[in-house]
Amino acid sequence: MTNYTQLDAWIDAHFDEQVRFLQELIQVPTDTPPGNNAPHAERTFALLQAMGIDAEKHPVPAAEVHAAGLQSITNLIVRRAYGPGGKTIALNAHGDVVPPGEGWTHDPYGGEIEDGKIFGRASAVSKCDFSTFTFAMRALEAVCQPQKGQLELLFTYDEEFGGEVGPGWLLKHKLTQPDLMIAAGFSYQVITAHNGCLQLEVTVHGQMAHAAIPESGVDALQGAVKILNALYAQNALYKAITSQVEGITHPYLNVGLIVGGTNTNVIPGRVSFKLDRRMIPEENAADVEAGLRELIAHTAAQSPGITVEVRRMLLAKSMQPLPGNKPLVDAIQQHGKAVFGEDIPALGTPLYTDVRLFCEAGIPGVIYGAGPRTVLESHAKRADERLDLEDLRRATKVIARSLCDLLA
Image (tube, rainbow, N blue to C red; front, side):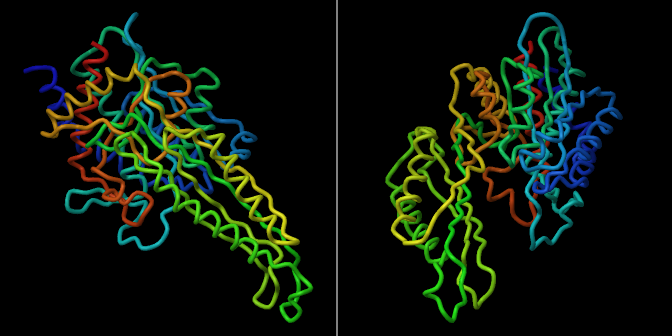
């Protein structure tokens, strides 16, 4: 048998164990917000130890975690040194997730299995790739027994809030400096580029007053409506801007949260809203932010008595493909086609991830892992998030095979 056949056989023989590992990961909540994620790292650490895998714990100082808007973070690193020479390859998956929300027909923390699918928050994004990467590493060591290079598993907990106290913190403190990296993703494509994301909180100030004498106040909501109309008009223009990256269309803007007023019979003196602006790889993030701030300020100035504050919540730059990612792309496409029986395209995605932080540091990376063809199919960030277990099995084989090549 070839190494590939033996790798596949090892993964098949240990697949029930892999599924149980994923179930246990799903059963420890990591809702972000609030972002109390250290308990999940402790559980992951214990599960790895039970498999004979040592991990380093890297707790992020509380002041830095709180400044990022979270409660607790312990990032984990598993280092496996195989011998002198060769590449250091990092596999990164994040454990933090958005809260489950409403409408579930399965326990969001149950890891229940039905019709060949596992259900639960983070089953597809991206606790699944804690298991994909862990069992690919175990298969690699059992079958290929690499003699050079190093492999790192990076299990981090700040993707939803931008990654700065997750992989960004590890990179800043030089705790990881790989030559190549693969981050959690879906298994029917290898992602080489992604959108950037700018999130702003806009607070509109007026003057609160009794609704019976509205002229004694300044309506902050009316001021906010004018700003929102200007933003939505700008959003319509974005459709004319087309990205040249396959898989990415055009920039867009979303207002996802609005809060304001004090009571029905009171002229609102303050209204705030939070907006999310997705940036295609061709855009300059600083120019995008400056343009939005100018539009908001100009529109606010047209309403007497209205003042406005704009606070940046998040700036995640787009992921730009680096030429050095070719060995990753080639290996994943080759083995993806062999395992899945179809071509695996290399393209971009409109999502943003913390992989960009590695690319900004000059480390070539791609996104690939267990999952369906699209975010929509996975129900990520929606009720009843799920993962087809055969996609988990096959993605694990692709990663193991690719590592066997890259560390040969």
